[in-house]
Image (cartoon, rainbow, N blue to C red; front, side):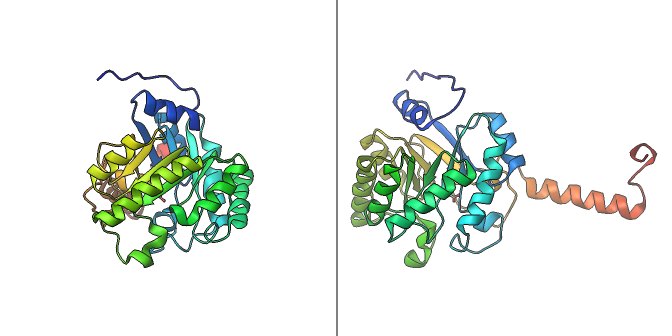
Length: 272
Ligand code: KIV
């Protein structure tokens, strides 16, 4: 299979659809702050997601539910200030778009105006179709999110694989087709069987970006802190750790403490 790799000076929602058409896989990671976003954008990532997983990894909440719109705007604006090339997608947090499409539009406009992000992501299918449609009328690009949708954790009860049963798989496929019809430019599929994810990706022209959804989709996303190995408590099967920063950082901190306590730091060259 020959893969066309086009150089993108700036990644847009159109570039992503083009990448799928050209069979170029899309790389996406989360980011929540200026420094990390600058590094990963410089490395050449296609999409940065200012995920509401900030609620977990940045603020230490057990779920994504507590994070507020103001907090998401703070994280997103820090990321936007750092980047030169990638597309920045921002999660609409829990409670800012469900059940009230006017409120959804207001929330999305605040994200776009106050953070400078390029698109928003919403969790859910047919039940939030009105919100998606209304946001799209304002010219705001929308990324969908199906499968495991952590904002509904209290409905699911667990973070296990979704859509293993036929009925749920059928609903997921219908929702995916609906999201494309409504005008979403891409879709995240989280923690679903690889076969189903591949079938969804093949049925859509918009890109499907997976997390725990196998290799048959159009791109992959991971939470940055997880792939850097900054925590050792979260061990899902889908996670590949590219560094073991938890151990590396602990070592560096311990060395610093030792150096300060022993008087080794600062030395003569490290003072004025
Ligand atoms: O908030 C997040 O980090 C996400 C990804 C897991 C896709 O939605």
